[in-house]
Amino acid sequence: MAQSMFLKGKRVLVTREESQAQSLCAMISEHGGVPVLVPLLSFQRSSLDEWKNAGEKARRIQTFDWLIFTSKNGIHYFMELAKEMDLPLNRLPKIAVIGKKTEMELDKHGLQAAFIPKTYVAEAFLPEFLEVIHKDETVLIAKGDLARDYIYKGLCARHIQAEEAIVYSNKPPEGADACLINTLKEQAIDLFLFTSPSAVETFMRIVCEAGLQEKMQGKAVVTIGPVTKERAERLGLSVDVSPEQYTVEHMLKEIDLYYQNKECRS
Image (cartoon, rainbow, N blue to C red):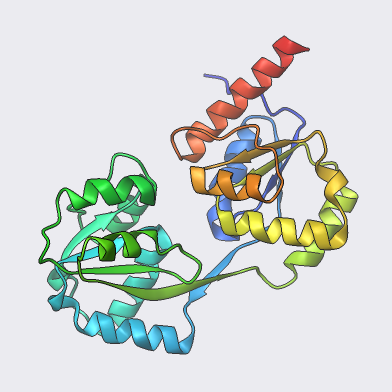
């Protein structure tokens, strides 16, 4: 069946980390769009001190009842840490994950999640998780350096013993500022895509410092997830599309509807 060409001729700015952006760029092309990739995120293992601290907690993994992963990056770098420490994966505690993509990453390592929330955000995870965890159980949360501490604080507020292990860092790649500035000056972008709050923050910092706010006027802004949307709006962006289901596939469907409605109004 032929693909709907709702993005025909439209230039779409993609701000995802480069290796994770390839499938999204391919989907944009399939729908007639022109993906313009300017990665504003790059992931690597956490700082030496944080990595060492995470390793000390991983060494005590059998003292925890639950291990929580909030992203596929968390799984990737925790498994790298486990391999480095020769930590047997069959001795890991019960695992909880947020999101289908995170679950799929877990499956690559031959592991299964004991808990997945119905909605893929921390605000939904916490109340559902509190229904399955016992008061005397302990939790280790593997996360990135810019990830929120919402789950950790929520568990502590319920007097549940929890610790965080910072296993990866998230920084703009080298040359991101110049690349974005040149792109905005040289190309007319029709649609801006943001899939994380940190990408929004980096984008707005660069745009404001360079005085390029006018390049976004009248253009469509798309976000995935309520946290990313809230951050974008707080930084002064007007969000046009933000799907209720936080996946790239649902985002593309909502973009299609957005342009259909726009044509009806014109």
